[in-house]
Length: 151
Image (cartoon, rainbow, N blue to C red):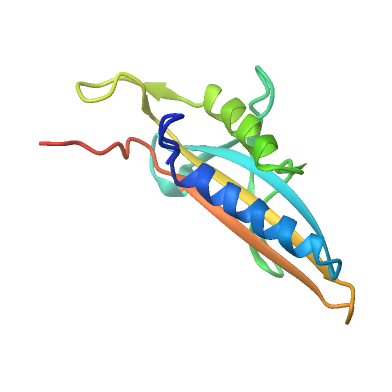
């Protein structure tokens, strides 16, 4: 999902493209756009129905969160969203999130993830010409232990 600096993975490529398109539309003068990022870790030791969800924040800021049902579907209560202005902002926050992730080791990968990581970006656009507003979300999900094994 990430890849080395010389061959960046899908997460970073998607964010680069998202901000490129946003910048292009904002430069046209017809659209205003706000973007917010959230990162959460889902550590699942006993089954999906009993998953523990944690917010990713600064060192030692792992807080259990609850999944709730609302009028628009499922949501994570009290999940922190951070306003982002560039792909570089997202990059910095994703590095912070990954540095706090639960990992373990096995024969194939010394730093195999033991949790799922959900990176979500919420885009709110306002169209100046007709007053339309739109809300979009992009979710990038890195599954636990999903490293490719070559045989």
